[in-house]
Length: 170
Image (tube, rainbow, N blue to C red; front, side, top):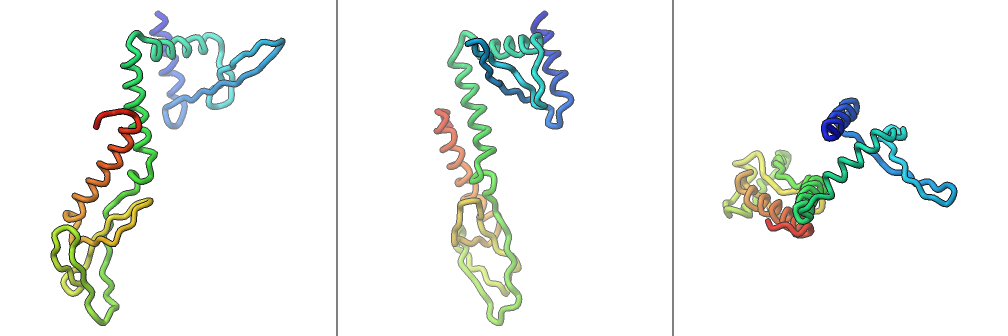
């Protein structure tokens, strides 16, 4: 019965907010030498006692279960995924096409960092680079396909470092 009430409470409390999530925080107050924690919702209103009891029961069910290792694995995986989303190196690493300048008197060229093909401004309109938040490189590529292997390798290295931070085998 209580689990059904908890489910209903969560469904009702998430429907009104923009992100379909409800956020709570605790406020601590002390009176007559006793400390009390108050549960406050994302709009600044104190949660009623029955609602707070449901939330506390839901938290107990989520965190206090017999298999503590399972909870830790779940939290580590979730935190790693959140860290990946927050990591600017991962989020902003991209392959970008650049136009050759047409206002030059002489043709300009380079050798592709991947396939070693000679690329000349006379024959091509676009060349490619890998750019990111804290990544700079002088490497230039003749096509997106040539840049993909290094781009994917860099993304995998960022993932490995984040998963390693949370003790997850990748």
